[in-house]
Image 1 (cartoon, rainbow, N blue to C red):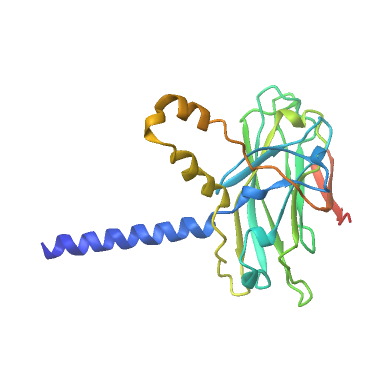
Image 2 (spheres, rainbow, N blue to C red; image 1 turned 90 degrees about the vertical axis):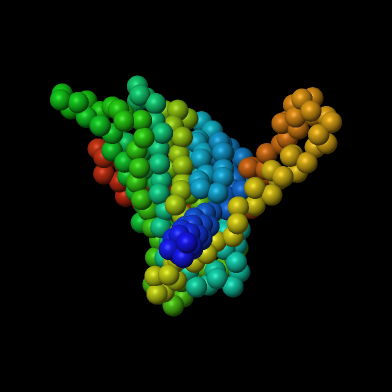
Amino acid sequence: MKISKIFAAIAATATAVSMIAVSASATNWANASYADDDPSTVKVISVDENKASFTATADGAAAKLRITIGELLEEADVANVKSATWTVTYEIPEGTAAGNGVGGGTYFGIKNSTGYWISPDYDDDGNAYWGSGTYTATDEAKFLLPTEVLAADSELVFMDWSNHEAITAMTVSVSDLKFFDGDGNEIAQKAYAGAASAPAAEEAPAAAETPAADNGAATTSATTGNATAASIAAVMAAAGVAAIAAKKRK
């Protein structure tokens, strides 16, 4: 009995630690929206605590997803951020024009991220194509100077700037966003605000049954909304080699 209780306690502890780890890595993407105070800069497809997915509103256009750091971190923690990392994933249907590839970067409040570039696949004859369907890259930002201090209203603008001719066929997702302090410790993020609306839909009177469930399903989403001015970054590609040049747009 004692041994079984010890194992049960260990299992409970492991579960609790696992839950803490998931919570720390979750991101409040609920208010992710368009940049530059311009709805044409992005089409938000979906958001949850794990990722934000978006695409461009027109082929050959840049896609820019904006959120402020104050929506992700407690105000007391913002100034402690010394680095951040995240994953960028492209879902590209087979047969989509390959071009030179896709790439982008992030205007991260006070400076530009390292940026990323994803090259297409090539057949034996050297013809470019998208074959796997899912392509992943990582990006990061580091704040090494004493003057590089984020504020709660610092904007994070995640951008595809490849101006791909078939960009609307692609879905871009940002996930695994993590913030670290100067000692490399991960900074806990705010809870996902979008989850707060879920219980309300479930509190409909039981007597309503099917009709009430149908009506309740037609709730509006808060994944898009108002945004203030954001920033510009550019990825210029040629034959699979990219360089990022960016500046903040007021």
